[in-house]
Picture 1 (cartoon, helix red, strand yellow):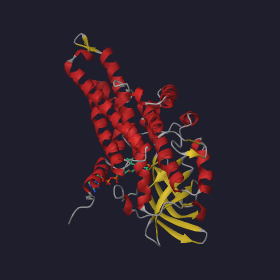
Picture 2 (cartoon, rainbow, N blue to C red):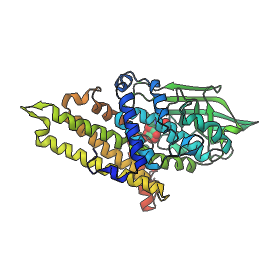
Picture 3 (spheres, rainbow, N blue to C red):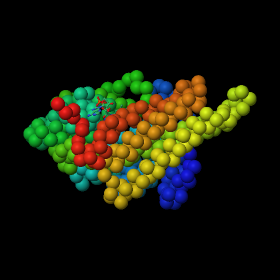
Picture 4 (cartoon, rainbow, N blue to C red):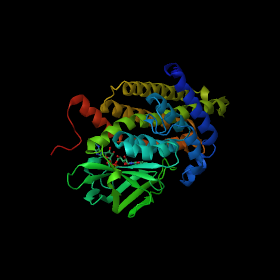
Length: 387
Ligand code: FAD
């Protein structure tokens, strides 16, 4: 999958991190992932292994976080996704959504209090924006925060929140009843009135524990209100950045799928010849390879724009949407190439095929990200139907 020699684009540190993560996930995650995926259980045994990689917290500097370059963080994401997308989603929700929000929008005291143990994966975080009736239209969310003596009372519901069934720290967004603006809060696992129930029967990312959260009269002390979240725009700032990392999941997934298909076509024979000998199969494989090269280069350029402070939200959205679309196409070709084995989860491809579906939808669906880019290049927002 490294046909255009991407390594030449990477620093020695980035190459070393990429190798370290690849070795870890191939050794510690690959042998067990299908078992957990089938059972839709989270592989807690993997958490200390991922913690030892020292990648949680990604680009955050200080507070025990690794302070990686954006590119290094992206490569680590891709390497995990190359072997298992659920594990990469787990770390992205924890690191690129929850930790990043605390880092960008938290007070100094909050950063010192929460980030060090989150960086070691000694504690786990989740990030709750979406609600049952407010998905793409997240800015309309209905969960409320009411000011009371010494803190806030949160009332409402959240849906789809990854890691929420076991998270120690829940970053929750709610509408301030006085200002009608969105605020952010750190809710702790054992808060009275908090309940998270696992969403069952997912067809993709089955190891990720997505939950429905019920917040009934949950008290959050003043010290756990995130001072930097004062409007929906503040959540969008986090999303624009985390979308770059999410774009690297499909890159990793398709690299793994391409490599697997390449091997499979050499090994399996039909009509007395390896599957790789048939022109139609070669055409599919080449199309997959071309997609992987283009996806990587777009993702890499996005990282460079981000690192130089020039990346716009529209660019991040285009990266997430276009790369995920290409990945869906690529993995579907891989599924065809494996014939019947392409629908069995023991083979990487069927699992990847399913795992891409939620990735196509979360962090802004393909359509919503397209509209974010569309607004940026035309100056016209077209999210709401014109009456
Ligand atoms: P809807 O908003 O109901 O959209 C349905 C369809 O309508 C989509 O095709 C959409 O593109 C289209 N659509 C909607 N509005 C428009 C429009 N204006 N113009 C054109 N088309 C439109 N959220 C969190 O807060 N935290 C998490 O950790 C988290 N993890 C997730 C993990 C998984 C596995 C999944 C599936 C979701 C997760 N989400 C999370 C929620 C995710 O961000 C939402 O599912 C997503 O924003 C889409 O919302 P929805 O599912 O309600 O779809």
